[in-house]
Amino acid sequence: MRNSFLPLLLLLSSPLQAVPILGANVWYCSGSYFDFRVAVAYSNVAQHPLGYQTVETFDFGDGTSAPITLTATELHPGPAHGWYLAEGSITHTYALSTGHVAAGLETCCRLDGTLGTFDLNNRRAGTLRAKVDVDLSGGGICPNSLLTPPVIWLSGGLDDTFVIPMGLHDHDPFLCRFAGDAEAGGGANPDGMTIDPETCQITWTPATGDPAKLWTTQVQEERFSNLGTSLVDFVIGLDPAKPVCRIDHIDPGPPARLHIFVQDVRSGIAGIAATQAQNASITLPPFPSGEVQPLDVVATKINASQGSQVELRVTDTAGNVTNCDPIFTEEIRAAGKPVSHTYPGVPAAEHRVTVTNGDPGLKKLEIEVNGHRFQMKDLEPEEERTLDVASAVTPGVASTFVLTAHGRPGGQAAVLIWDGN
Image (tube, rainbow, N blue to C red; front, side, top):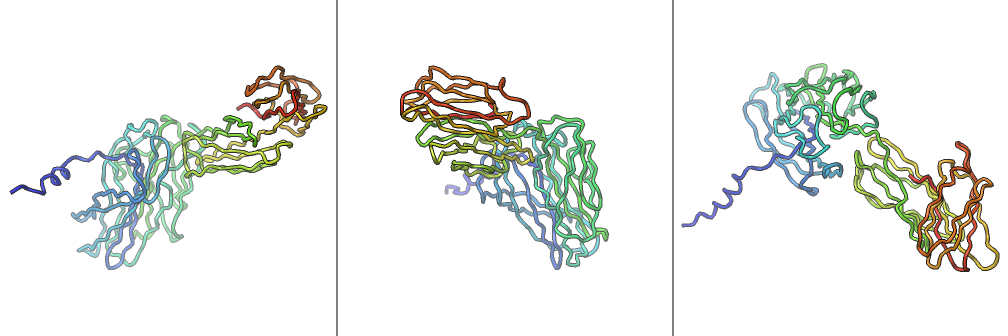
């Protein structure tokens, strides 16, 4: 008789490739039984969706263990496909009612360099140990659970000093400490890092390591009365660079549209806010916090006969901020004598003028900056040309621009006054 279970058995016996882990959080509540809660941040190279389930082995610390199912509850984009947070719980009844045991996960593997810059400076590729101290006397105690995210980005670089606050569920008396090298597994804690035992606030001055990689640390929170602990094991990344916010291209329309390129390839974009939109409607693309892929922000002119000013405030998850505020206008050659348009209060940093000509377009654009005259002559249909007028700008002093369109009536061009970055 054919064994119908053989293909399944062969499938289950195939070795599974370990998924690199960024960190984990373990805590528990006790009563007549012990309820353990676990959250693990995994690399999402395989692009798993929400609801994807991962199985780990949970060690109860009394010589027994059981599988715990962790379900993906959060997806986070980022370098090397980002990561996902998987959460689950498991209960256990202990035979003893006194003493202490260490319960939790001991699993493979921490980030191992297969994800490019998403690698570790310390505890690299080692076994992750995430175990709490369990007080078997119970007593209905739920040790505080740290609310620290699995990934923390900091704005700065080596030799900068950072303060990292740690979140707590309640305000009962507690002490915080770093897990020992053997407790966390895989080696030493980052150099230059200290923790305030009463507030859990971490102070860190990284002096060594590759700033393109990550550091990992594990914090154990324990009660004054020694009624057990909870822990969080997480990674920290440095991101000294501001997000990129630059002009991508102009669609002369009508209506004229300005496409703005936004991206942060390190910690990812946390938010985009339109802080100013004069005579323009702003379309912000949907994106999750931590997005590292390019984003297209579109500013559409409302009244073609008037200039527009758009200002964006772009923030990454490390807290770096970029403000971009180009003046976006559309010059139309009306019938009769050429008409000039004046734009006062232009920041000194914005001294480049980019023309995207239409079809039909302008033949010439006169640009007066603080009384100094410039010209863009012999413009071709659909030509894009940039002129730097920095020679007419006084550093630190706002400028006044006057634009005058020339050519056949009906010709038009989109004009951008910006910093060129």
